[in-house]
Image (cartoon, rainbow, N blue to C red; front, side, top):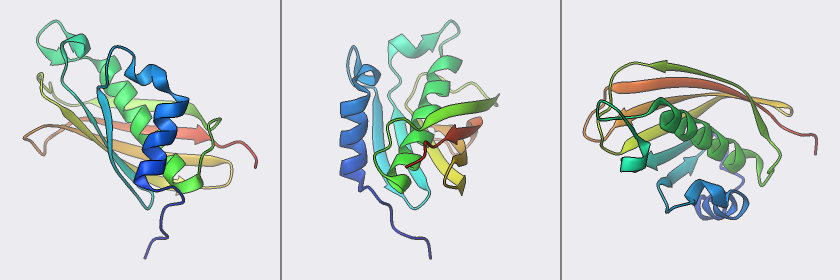
Length: 143
């Protein structure tokens, strides 16, 4: 059985809102929906500002969603460490998601003292088909 998270859902959400208000500039679009042992779930509203020509959510919007979801999973499991930073992100865009909400399921594969490695599966509302798969590595500052 996995250990419980260090930060609750509410603590993680409040920390993100306080430390990264720029994520909600122009209105809230990124919604933390859950945190758990080595995991987090986040939703991105399918808003006009995230669309690219062709009627689909843009790659940069999906990249931000994946990064933010992995960061939430890390914080929930190590505590409020604002200076944990992304060192690498990789993306595979698998299908066109359309204009609906996107859901990011982040899972930490390794959570060490200095590095965290995780993956994110992004799906579109109403489908279990992956639209994007991402991997990321984050540097955790010494305590």
